[in-house]
Amino acid sequence: MIGVSGSNVGKLKEDIAKLPSVEKVTRINIEEQTKRYTGKFRNIGERGASEHIMMFITLKGTPIFENVQAVVEDFIKEHTVDEKKGDEEEFDGGW
View (tube, rainbow, N blue to C red):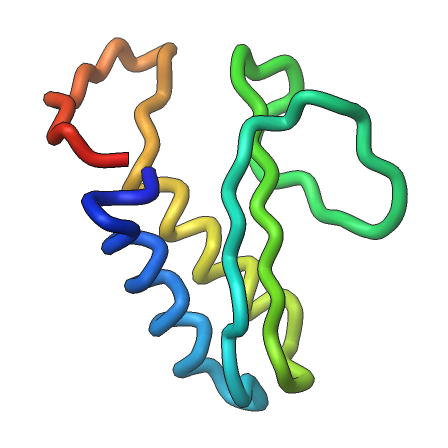
């Protein structure tokens, strides 16, 4: 999902930065969810999935949240595999 040397995350930063009212994307952290989080966040995906990840995006600006979410959802669809479909992608050696 992260890509070789963070290339996929770099592309995600560029795509978010192109949105109206986004001045700068400071940081994107992607990590496995290992604890319960409180506060404001948005769930994307299916309940009861076998894996859970958290994506923390720090940006400067006042974008419309739904536009940011659409970019993130496209990123997730492109860089993850649905277990139910049985799709197997070849491991490219990068994280």
